[in-house]
Length: 592
Ligand code: ADP
Ligand code: MG
Image (cartoon, rainbow, N blue to C red; front, side, top):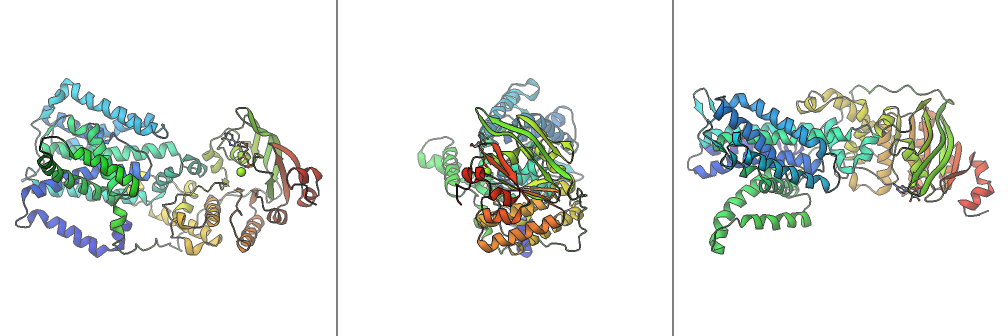
């Protein structure tokens, strides 16, 4: 956890002080009880931070998963006499299964259909609890046993405090580990839309489902604790109102920070407690007036502090130390490169139609291994669309694309990437909140294999060091070493394009597709880029380049393909092309 590493002594002091709270003389019971509930809610909020803040999926239905956890243990302990400890794995299993079934259709929804979907099943689950006879309908189930451990009974709010906050601490550490890993980067990459992530081999649908289930499991754990602290369950704490409150905690705290979830749960719970006692007196009648305040608060946060309040608290702490790169980590294995001069890419009559527009019209050309081929043409000629066809982002309407002799047209982007085709985007697709290093490391996704569990329990560290070392090497290679630990968004746009090249190089590609890499670069930077691309070519890399700067293109490329209105109007050596009257007319504007 970055937050912990920035001031370890401070955090140890805070935790010890907090742990002493229940045994300090004079601390009133209701205080401890309040902190018990803050801990229980924090678990849900941490899950929502990962789901909504990090993964970009807003869920109003999280309280439903708290309900699955709570009802499972309620039924098993109150009706079947199980021990609460035995029900924990069952509660998690039921919640996980429910999350899997609800998640499958939900994560496929895009835009605001996704939050709407969560509202829909949030309401369904609430009425399911309320109308099921075996679950006691709207009266719920009472008479749950308290937690006991040998002679210790957790009936007392002071004893259960430790159990709850132990769970919270474990959740904080595991979630922090998860985010700071290969899988975590895949989850964080979801923010930038699926296109870039898929182009580096991330299975975005799977990553979404993983974080959805992970968040639900934390909610299920929360429900299990809640049931035995309350010693009773009924549907109302698991409805859509509760779901909105959980979301408020995550958003208010800090939607991208694990500790922000705890922070948000603390603020909302304490505020709610105060408002519930003050507002009815002020207004002079009973009612849930705090809900109105929370609504206003949510809108204010979304307007003025999108990142929540935790970043403001973080500013008071010293800067966390940048991630250390282990220079001795073993280099990652390399792909065997195609033989220089062999046919690498054969595009045969590729066509892409968007409704009535034929954006790419039966275009054919080849790229040989070890060549830099330029794809030029006026704006709207179909260059970026061609790139999308070659990388599996779009599938051609007709035609064929052979890569190393294999048909890749129609394959998904991540399968094309796995074969060694890497790209940059004309409209930069980096994750602004991640560092340059973390962004570039996404490029090496397919060169690692560690998953969720190994990340959470730090069993992925050897591989992780290797991936980060590779990323650091590529960043150095493109000349951005001093920016490695800055957030990607803090770089100039031209530099961000270079970061995209480093990310593409991390894939260890045999074919590199660069869409306007020199746009926004200064003269000196363009020369450095040209030198880098020549160097890559001499190492056996093949490059397909879209670029408008003609000096840059003419000096660098071996071969040029010219598009105009989706059609190939010429191809040949740079010298041929610059003398071609058709090209001069269409593109170079008839200049002598
Ligand atoms: P270039 O990169 O050469 O400037 P593009 O490949 O981006 O050109 O676009 C070629 C044509 O296809 C343009 O007319 C553009 O408006 C159109 N086009 C590109 N993408 C889409 C899309 N997803 N849907 C509809 N039209 C598109
Ligand atoms: Mg373009």
